[in-house]
Image 1 (cartoon, helix red, strand yellow):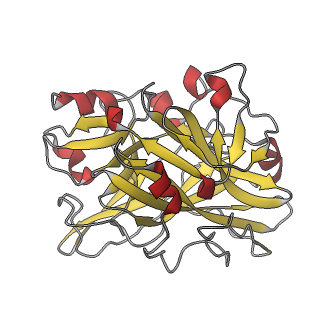
Image 2 (tube, rainbow, N blue to C red):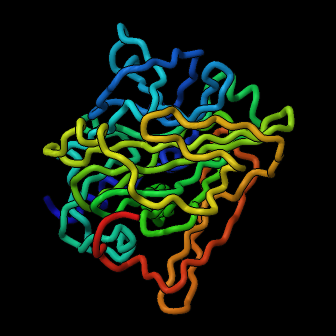
Image 3 (cartoon, one colour):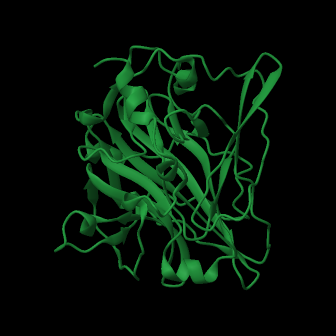
Amino acid sequence: MAAAALTAALLLTPSAAFGATDEPDLDQTLDELEVVHGQRVLDVGHVDMGPKFDDGAWRFLIHDDVARADADATSVWRYPDETVLHVIDSARLTVPDDPAYAFIGADAGSEVYVVPQTQNPDVVWLGWNTQDPEVMQTIDRGITLSLTGVQGPGVVTTYLQSGSFGDPQLLWDSRVTEPQPVWVDVNTHTHANWVFTEPGVYLLELTAEADLIDGSHVSDAQRIRFAVGSATSPDDALAESWSGQTAQDAPSAGAEAGSDTGHGTGDVSQDALGPVAIVAIVVASAAIVVVVVALVRGSRLRRRVLAERTAGSRDIREAPGGGGE
């Protein structure tokens, strides 16, 4: 595949990048959907992650939107420890010879696996939303969604891109060891580019937390399971146990990460924290610190939030030398 293929796939419209409701594929309204048990492998179709109250407890779950493709099916919420996102070989693209994509962590001309920001009907389409009806009625302005740990054989990056000439806006990078928070406004539906440099099983630990209008604070951490590559067994992803490191200062207000066999803690505290910053990921070489601010904008985004993080002497442009964090 020509090197330009990845560029073409990732140069996207502003509405797709920022979750505006004028994009038909992103314009959705959620009903009160059921939360179900049972193992499920998702390799095509529309999927969102997001918060939902499950029997009164705040949970970070997976929205299996099968009804979008099949009017006779029923969309549901699923537990992350029972769900595998299978990124099959149809997702393979060639890294372009363009320094704008050096952060991906793979050499130009090499193949990577891409879950794209705009839908490829042959690949699972992964995003996030804050559109559950009870969540929208309960949270104060929005949530903070943080990547707090990654386990896997290669580098994982997640980023947005606005329009044909916009620079990539890096949200998450598996080589960063600190929590990487993104502010997500209420009633937001966003999709991003997810890039995996190697096939294999990946676990991504994500924490969703929010201040509620009653003054309380809620948080839940879950590990999202990926089987990358058609030859990678989803059963292996379901069976994978966590041996990676979670960021020690994850912004979870005292809530522990969900275990590999449970459904997270959903702990609630009375520490009403302000909305944590939108993304700030630092790209550094030697002692030079470069701050890259990623802007996530929902349909009711009312402000921009900045956070700064230093990453020492790490150079994001270096190709990966081993497994994930």
